[in-house]
Image (cartoon, rainbow, N blue to C red):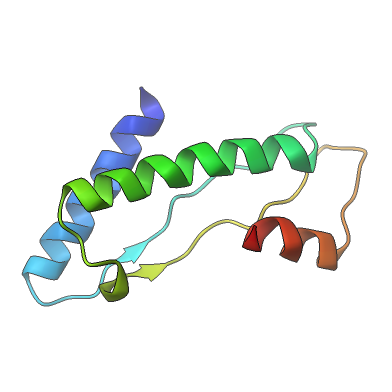
Length: 94
């Protein structure tokens, strides 16, 4: 429910911004607290980004008229596993 509400709020903000001639910065932030691995972050990022884009479409937001500022996909801040910059880039762009 929290993800849906946050996604809806971002979409409404983007729609209102575009309706007023502005380019919204859409930042679906995913906190990296925890000991989880990069695969878990990727799983959560996919779900969050899917919700955000669903609600952006529902609100008739023009995708080409937004700046998307996603979080990088990394292991949790307290994770013992570390990821190389190349791995982070690969997961983030996936």
